[in-house]
Length: 127
Image 1 (tube, one colour):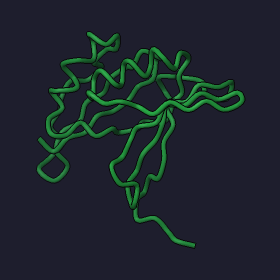
Image 2 (cartoon, rainbow, N blue to C red; image 1 turned 90 degrees about the horizontal axis):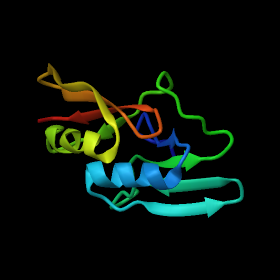
Image 3 (cartoon, rainbow, N blue to C red; image 1 turned 90 degrees about the vertical axis):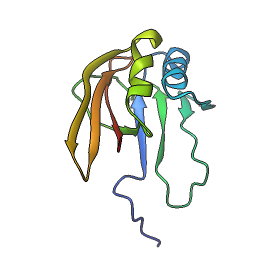
């Protein structure tokens, strides 16, 4: 069995409305997500250019996926500068909970947002 060198291999952000959530994340990151529907589950995945050793994840809508502001905190890549996605959050229907904040020279910057589904999500960038 191959072991991963990433601490995180996959994440799922629970949503109530997959279309609304897709529009939000596609807008703030200027991306196109892949939509997949199975029995009882709708997903929209974040696309990685090369999945070898990369971490990715999806928005997930099902009876088992319940959004909440106090759940797991996922840090999404906001490189090259958090100001870019943060500037689009409110226009896309979300809320900036903590603006771009310097952590230290090695870590860079972080911010917290609330998405359209009520999830608290973190963003990270080195600049």
